[in-house]
Image (cartoon, rainbow, N blue to C red; front, side, top):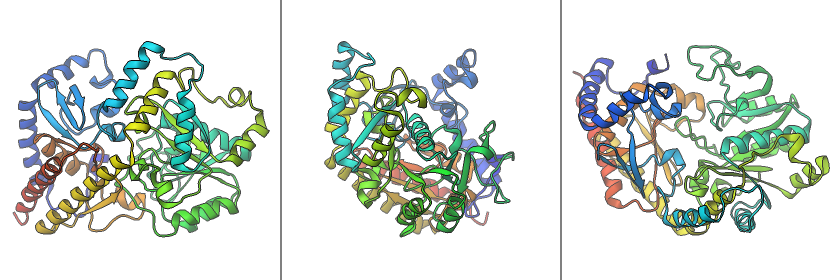
Length: 465
C-alpha cells in the first residue's frame, strides 16, 4: 500500500506515531462535528462523500466542509478559521476572491457569460502574457490539463510523431500521456501495488526519464519518435525538485538536436515571478502552458507559442480549420466571464509588487523552518522556489522524482498536516508544499513556523523511548 511508504529519516516509530495520531484524531473530531455529520450525509449522493476525489484525500477521518474563504483565511462550517498556505494547491495563489477579480466577475456576469465570440479583453490578455513570458501567440482553454492535452496534440500534428516524453513522478493534470511512472526495473510501470493511475495505455504514448538526467533524456529522444518534451522547470508535485545547473539549457539543446518540441508547464512555477520561471531564468520553450491561478481561481488556462509554431500550425491547417481536425477547444473555452476574471487578475492582482511580497514571505517561512530543523536536529530540509516552499523528509534536496518519492512518508504527512490543521493552519495535502499569497502577514508566517516547531518538538521528544 502507498500509505506504507516511510522515510528513512522520519524520527519516530509507527507505534509512537500512532499514539500521537490518535490524540490528534480525537481533537479533530471535537473541533469539526458539523463537517463530520455533513460528510456522513454526503455518502448518499456523492462517491465517497466528496464531489471530486482529491477533496477527500487530506488524511483525516473526514474533510473540512468550507463555509467561506477570503484572502488567506478559510472558515469551515463549524466556525474554525484557518490560515491558508495551501490556497487550493495554487488555484488561489493570490488569495481567495481577490477584490479586483471579484469586482470584474460581478460586472461581467450581468454582461454575458459565454457566447462563443471574443471580447476585447482577450487582446489585452494576449499582449500581457506576451510581455510576461516572451511568447507572442496565445490561446485559451478551461484548465491546465486541457491546455497540456491540446498542445501535445498540436505537437504530434506538427512533428508526425506519436510519443510524449515526461519526467518520472511529474504531474501535468489528468492527461493520459503524463501519468506513467518508471518501475523498479527501469521500465514503465504497467501494474504494481504503487500504481495509482490504472487504466492507461502507458506503453504506447509515453517515454519517461528522471529529471536532471540529460543522458537519459538524449537516449530516449534518439528514438526520434518523441513529438514533445513536457516538463515543469521545477518539479512541484513530488516534494519539489530543483533543476541542476545547466539541465534546462541541455533540455532545450537536445530537443533542437532531435527535432522535438519543448513545452514548459508554468502552472505551479508561475509562483516564481510575473513571468514565471521562464522569464526569471531566460528559458526558450516552443510552448508554455499555464492555468489555475491566472484568473483568481475561476477555471481558465492558456497556452502560448512562438511565431514559428504559429506559422507551422497555420501552414498545416489554415487559419480557419485549425480547431476542427485537431479537436482543440470546448464550447465554454475563452468565455467572456473567465476572460474578464483573467484580465483583472493579471492586471491588478498578479503584479510585481505582489510577487515581491509573496517571495519575501516564502523566504521568511523557509528561514524559520531551517532554524527549527537545526534546533531539533531533525534530518529534514526545505526546498525553495519563488513564493512556494516544501518540507522534505530527507537531509538534502532531491535530484529527481524517484529520490523525492522514496522519502515520502504518508503517515507522517497525514499526522503533521492534521497537527497543523488542529491549530488552525492549512498546508497542501499529498505533500508538504506551502504557498504564500500577498496579503500574508509576518504574524501569519510566524504562526505557521511556530506550529511546525511544536510538532517537531513532540516528534524529537520521542527519540530513544
